[in-house]
Image 1: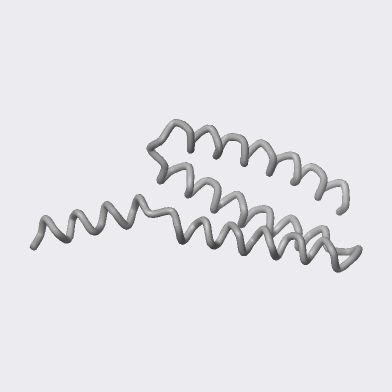
Image 2: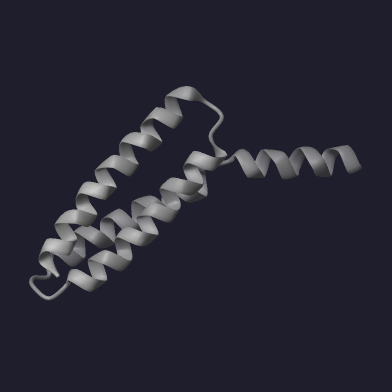
Length: 89
């Protein structure tokens, strides 16, 4: 019984579906916010922070080299987005 609990715990720690869903939600919200017009710089900055948190969580849960590469690419893209958001603010 204890072994089953430990296995479930570690399997849940490796499951990234929840993070992927939240990341998708944040990305959709980011796009919607961009489309609403001017004066959204601060909000876009906050959404970018949330996107970064999800990307970091994906990276910490991943044990695969290919996934780590993708996480690094996502972080790089996010930094570029943050720079653009700063230009809007």
